[in-house]
Image (tube, rainbow, N blue to C red; front, side, top):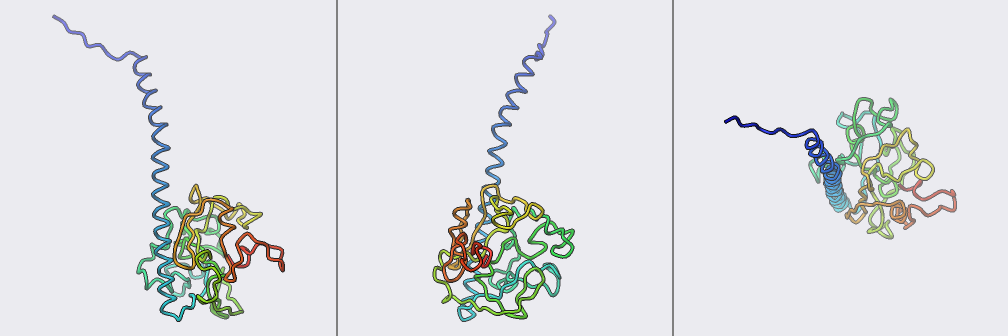
Length: 246
């Protein structure tokens, strides 16, 4: 007797392929969301540990906040002479990786030859931290504090006693939030790149951290030691306090 093995017909193959495509369309976004959620969790975990490092530093230095530095790329992170707040509090955490957000994709600013570090892929690699240290919450020292490689000419010490609402005062945040715009926050398209899809990590002066997912919540956070909120208007300048203290 001769046995015949029946093969799949073209219609059956197409049905199987269609089912696989439908399952992939359903599952891939779920996997992507799970991966992003894991990155958010890692980012906020780093933020909480950094907040504790700042608190330990303050405890050892007579309740005075660390010296303010930001965006110093000359020389860049990891090379002799670089200055950053992350280096001041590093002894309390022992790991530079805590200052790297898993979603730190850098941005166009990193490629700027004067302001950034061409060839380095992230804010962490260039400036030493994926997190922005708010200048209103840290101590400015004339001739020492610097931002964008420029040294400040005035002093403004900040201590625990300076904060009217420490649990509400933002001292650090992710560099990029998806709702940042040029008109409101100064993130021109040439210097913006989305990191997290939903929001970003924020660290408060009392050491706790949480994930902020809207411009309204971001603007409601206190940003100046005296209690002014980020989105409130400074009557002297006509601008949000964000511009003076963030």
